[in-house]
Image (tube, rainbow, N blue to C red):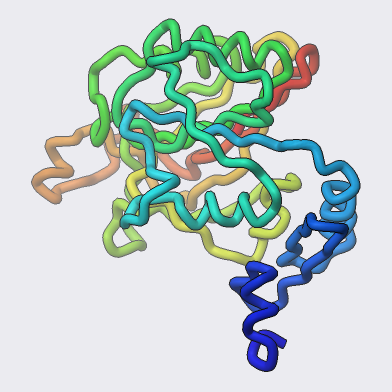
Length: 268
């Protein structure tokens, strides 16, 4: 009872109601959704206390995981820390190799493009079974026409291409916010089925299912009322309308997952 025993709740790093804390020796795991799957996974992590390191890339204006702010990811970082993940940063500009202890590399909202050397480092890591999470903003609000080798890598090796647009949802105020209309069945989205998720300044993505050994699956799509606006001048003048034959028309894919059958690597 966090009200009757607030110090005990604080010591267990409990921050939300309904949290189950599992302990073994000095280690503990938190479960915020009391399902059999989550409880079992937590027990397995306790029984296998090896270091699990999550790297967040830095150096391209990514969202901050260490300092609070309107666009920071400090809550994400704390959530992972509470689940015994070790959070580190990775600057591929200074060291174009991925550390061997990397469980996953997360690239969260880069505002500058990735170089060819950085992309090659990520490719080598993934070819050895690594996992990669990429969260991107529309080109118009980041690096515009600059060449981004990360974008090329996602297209050529995973069959995931990013459209140069900004999703408009006329049913939302402001319309630059996209709201998920449908989640496909997947372990990543199973807890979102009855929950609205919101994506400010999003772009659409296209999936190519013909990349050898790679399976890509859409995770989240928008409503059929949305479109991907490609006339950015009209956005500045607040005079947006879907341009048939030019703008991608909804429903639009805004999240996808990929898996390489050969390397066992994964991508979100």
